[in-house]
Amino acid sequence: MKIKEILGRYSTATVGLLFIALGIAFSVKSNLGVSALNSVQYALAVKYPRFSFGDYNFGLFSLFIFVQLALLRRNFKLIDLLQLVANFILSYMVDNFNWIFDHLGLIPESILMRYVFILLCCILTAFGISIEVAAGAWMLPAEMTVNAFTRTLGGKFRNNKVLMDSTLVAIAVVLCIVWFNNWLGPEAQPILGWGTVISAVLIGIIMKLTDPLVNRFVIRSRARRIYRLRG
Image: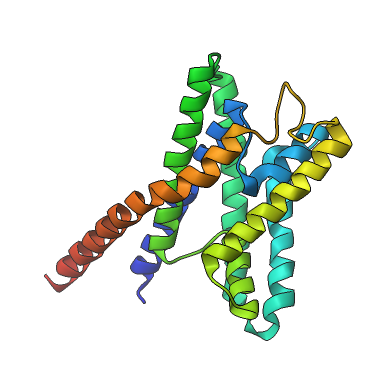
């Protein structure tokens, strides 16, 4: 694989991370609850704001890599550590998008706009994941961990993803009950809510549309590059 192609793939994957980070920022600002994958980190950020949401996101996702090491052992390859870079980029982008939203005052006041924010979260996240997968470069630790469970313990990737998300939500519920005496989190800043449910259902549905669109674009882009090289 040539250097230009490698750079192209990783640049494309980074664009996917940008979409995902922007989607996360929209879910946070909707104040309707974040996605299952971000629920534990967000609970920590609300309870202990000394560190940012992005900091906790980087910390938890980095712990996932130790889970992969325990599962894969010798099958864990050195190149898999690139997910740390992807993790850092995503966490950095999340904090910056949250800062931009606050700085510009992009905080939905009506209930309608809050649900619009959740819809935008789902669309952006679906596009981001589709781009990330189509790029064939680095992946985030969450997806890599689900893949490690699938390779080691069997089962389908989608089913294992649901199991992992459900586990994270269960942990978030316990933290909310212990810390906030409410299984959804504080009323003024809920950790879980309708936004969590909507994103769990809608992102997968939207990806059925974004996957073929992104794949078609990636294939055409590669075909144009091959044509230029041959020309």
